[in-house]
Length: 524
Image 1: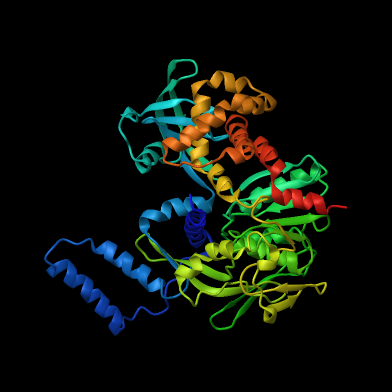
Image 2: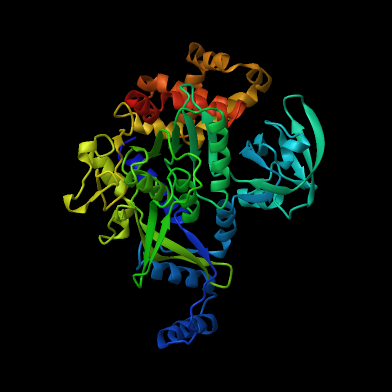
């Protein structure tokens, strides 16, 4: 595969994630004036003419959706339209939960296979296990039907407190079972994990800033303090943002009272300033914030506040560069717009919004530009405007105009050329392959310790060879032999993930994390 293809795919996918995940504040604000001007009347008449006079039947709803999208595209890259059909899933993600039965699953060989039940969810409480096949839900057949995923979701979800009867087949014991459970709120965690690394450092990984993020974060932070952590690593890599208030609350835990966290300025020039309080529970102690090219919005507020107040060390690569604030405005039919209403500035006065005056395509392809320029591999390739110099509390020079530049730069990977392999090993193809391997002999795999599991994956290269065949069967013909050790490492990680859980997975995968290693190398 040519190298240019994978950054293009990543750039498009992650830019879209940042567009959808980078909003800041929700609102039911309505315009102060409802008087229709000539242009509004013109648009309404056009829709009426199409509905009443056009020769063919036309879905005017879709035309309106396209019109709204087109209007917003004239503004900035982060003012976006959210169709009614998308609102539920996006709202659930940012609210931090949904009502359902609580499983991770694959549609595997045309049947619904449980990867694992959500810890504490209805399915786990009812006794469902990894590898179970759900054959029927309230008598509705789920196998052999080629049921679309969105239809499966609607069948498994429902009203809170509603009951559902499942008929399952437990392949491991060759049993047919009937299980009744009650749907309830299933959390969508925004904090993936909090754990103590082998060297005593605390580690917290935040994947987005939802309504529940601060509550999740503070629970993990308190637990790590009680465990006598020697310092804290806050991982905001791949975090496209979310609610600003959650980011501000998290920063407040690190700063003494009355220090500036962030300032927002609206169209009229009115500024809103957020400062720290005296409530912080980790105002002293080593602090490292991990960022990369896909850390955006609220993630950059956290990194910028820590950097400008000289509270900790920002580690990684230059962040995305989103310094615009959006409000979510409902349109009355279940759809909404996220409209840019302000800009935010870090404590030193930096706007970190990257330029978008050369078109949104160039803006969204910024990852490719960074890749081709070598910026992802060498700190001296980062383009910084000397005119945009600012100073931290202690007088250090920092730069504005396109993301947060880290204090400690870490290249994309230890070896140039491993990047496409790393992308592949973090894809769904790997987790599907590992599920298939476990499913073929679940009892044996579930009996393995992590040490034995690692030995099994490397044993006579059998699993490695099967993985290469799996890729080939899916039309991916990579020459992977030079990267076999790296591939086996990630394969073991995914086996650990599915068989043991989040804590064990992160303990495994962080052992070879370049940014963690960079921090270790800088310690006294």
